[in-house]
Length: 549
Ligand code: SF4
Image (cartoon, helix red, strand yellow):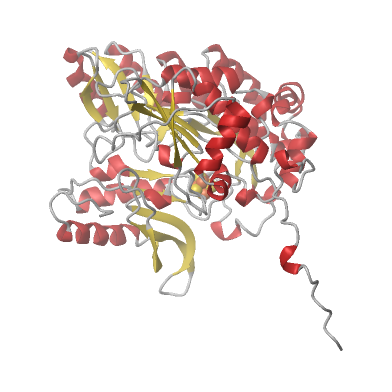
């Protein structure tokens, strides 16, 4: 039998398209693209109001249930009792609970007391009291029934909040410094830019069918609290050589299974130009982004293939119609910690008080309590941070001690240990259908154990727990990154555990943690493992040396 001859032009065949609209690939190349082409995700809102909320869970079209409802921040949550070993085996409908997770979009982390109380009421009325603050500054609720959704939207919209495009292949909530406008050292106040982009473009069908999610950060924060290095697009406050404050533009960052750091385009963007430039970058993503394979559909792959020079040229010529001037890089971040935990002065003589719930876990009652504490002390604003923390703003000097005492008395720590302050955990198996292991409980227990075992440890050290490789809690940029997976213990049983990434960081020496081959721990042994790593670091480090160094 003869082997068929290979085609002569095997190495010269036309490169396969990646589904870029701008190159003529308008026909859907996978199920997700088909779903979006069949009907825009934004259109599900009316069906939820008119049909699903009235006729109940079973009336929901599967394409809406597992697809378009995300355009309004709504996902089915994981059915309780299904272990992590089944995550990759079961069909999506077998993992679905009849309850939903709902993400409330909080652009720039900005919340008035009325908004905070509204979310607290919704959590208590419809979410069995659940409310977690996420590392994208959102508040996430669970146990939501489809029948409640219209009332929840009415309540949110009455105070200027929404869930529109909180998930899905859309421009998700914008990260912004919670201290914008009040930080004594800020480069500029990014708030007008955040609000302008939100008001112009969120809910706009022109940007509601993207290849995948699109994450934005806008900030003049001297601590770089909005982690611009890992967003699809980031506007970072700088001052140019004429002394004008504006933005340095970064594109193409993202973690997940193929992490990449964002790159500077080297342009200077004035605050007045920012919304048009944002529309240009997201327009490039929509038109040139890869739609064939979901795992190559984030902007970072396009930026990586094109390089920054081509990206800038396309932005300027095809989308803006004018060149942007060169601009400076941002100053290095203010100190080793990017959160805003503690008591610090504001520009206006008042103080802000940042505090640390444990791994972002709050509740409806706790949100009410926080609102009451803020109000009793003359504050009208409580903002969320990108580190699963919160900040009470505008506290008069003579009220600070009392605010701190009340927060501390309710286990909302203003002076937390390093472990409480710098440990984050994603949603994990409790509610997330993609999870392999539990995270929130493991994170809280880890904090308690490390505080007990290492009471004198004071160095900055980030510990991020993730329930799967998706890295919602940034596994690769933590000093100790923990990625959930099933592992075999000494008794030969398959149990929950974590793969360890060591030495990741953002800032002056941004880099991803090393995934040391074979370095894993079971969930049960996690506190022992982390204790050993921390003790070794403490023993071996030189004065001022950080973990990643
Ligand atoms: Fe779910 Fe994985 Fe994200 Fe955790 S990292 S919230 S388990 S998708």
